[in-house]
Image (cartoon, rainbow over all chains, first blue to last red):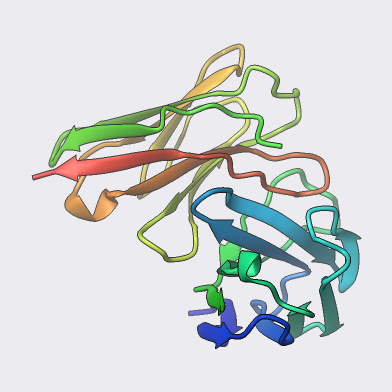
Length: 118
Length: 109
């Protein structure tokens, strides 16, 4: 049963510290998405990648957030320095866009990383 | 930006059909309608998607109006485990999903 995995599941840190969240997409998927969920804003798309290349990170605060895919099996989301307003659940999702460019695809979500910045 | 509008909450009696509406009046001709749900604090889960025709799978049915400006997700026999937030999403170019606020469905025993 293929699943998206995320680590850590929970993270408590102090303001100013660097936070790194990791995601392992489903093997064979070529798109990866990062979302943030808070009570106030709901689910927000932060960034997404296709074939490891960043396609859109307009939803991400550029001054402190960065997202990368070092290889096809790992996506990372870093916050440096972290702030209390970054406290949220961060979800990673992966999907497969066929090479023919079909206009539909399903996203498979991981369990999320619950981040608390004190 | 979300391109859909949904009622914020709904109740449904256990065993009855739950009909969740969604308006997407600005949908383009080649954009699909997706439904996801999120149970408690888990990651969202795919339910169903469609373009023009009505769709049915083991979880739900999707009814899309002929003008495609609205759709309804139908859970034929709601159970307590169907209590969740249901998101109606129109897929934007480039595969982004914008989730909006969703409908919080409560199934009542």
